[in-house]
Length: 129
Image (cartoon, helix red, strand yellow):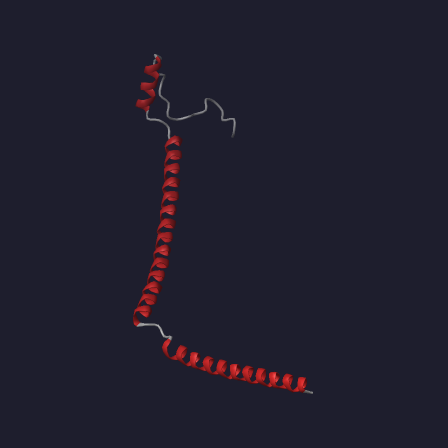
């Protein structure tokens, strides 16, 4: 019987210790929460720094957009210039050379310049008619 009383006393002491620990833990949690809510606020310097970071981020994004737009315009201008050069080259190849150039070419080959003919006329009857 005495053994049972000792166990009961130990259990009561253990229960009192656990209850006291629980109450103190809840009290310390409440105090910690109060101090955290009251004093854990950003300082003006921290707020300023965050605003500066946000502003720089927005500025970088804006500059990236501007640079991308400029790059696209430059690419478009290069494509247009290439197209214009190619068209000019095709037009220059399509034109007949000047008669002076032709006569100079014949002279450089050592051939007498044949009679210059700028029109093509069918002799006799037109085969396409």
